[in-house]
Image (cartoon, rainbow, N blue to C red; front, side, top):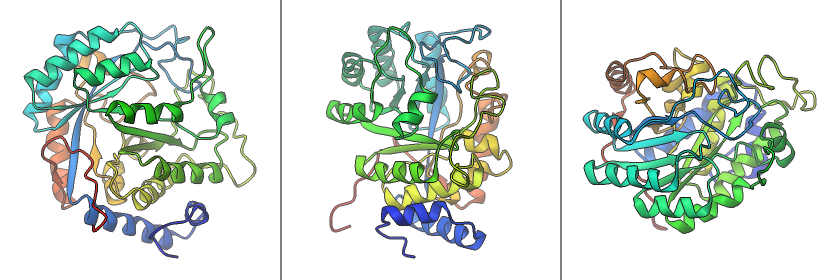
Length: 354
């Protein structure tokens, strides 16, 4: 089976592949495409989890609005700037500001923080703030934000509604339809999915991967499904997919999805995610990087807040000092024959001639 110009039925066949040698062949092919198209650089994005307030009721997330035992926080602009300066000191090219969908973070306040980061550092700014109105997205882009990440999690509308119920008083939004709006505003556009969500079929996941290509995404984030135990999907949710069709929430399946994504979207920036490193703490990041990933997002959230950003428990690196994690990460990249990327690490589009 060819690895170039993969057709939808071939994506599906690779997701169903059981032979370990064949799976390793897929991973190696993706790594070769990664080396050819985006090179040996691993772009390091400093993650700052700026707020754990959220108005949503997602059925797997520990920050969901009904979670009454969560100690909520919202970082100040000065705290965010301090973390951004730490990113500069480590040589990172980007900060990623992430939060629950928190309308206590106003349009004006975040725009002011973005302007300060752009004025006081050389960093690119990625935002992951959920489903905000277009006016907010436009204001943040005007303030200098470079990228926006909005994962659609699954293109299966029925499954999406089950895991992302719309809270009372809020309108349902089609996240996939928001992505062209982000591009129109001038953002680099990122999205992605969870792998192994209860009820997710292999055929549905294959459609997700094909959709990445159709959307021409600049960034694609994929990680195994991990539910917080104190949520409706925590503690062993029933698997509603037909027999043999449920996607496993395993490191192996995640690596195959990463590989297929690299093959169908060769130019995209693809992270080896914290979720992958959580389910495989020994080799998760490294294995993701061997299967086509070219981004890692070290956590720069201040220690007093980090454990409170409990989307799920026991996140990889949650107790690590950023300096220690940074030094260990550089050693791991060196062992892989990879090097940290310089600058913002934007997607580089190839010309028609290559």
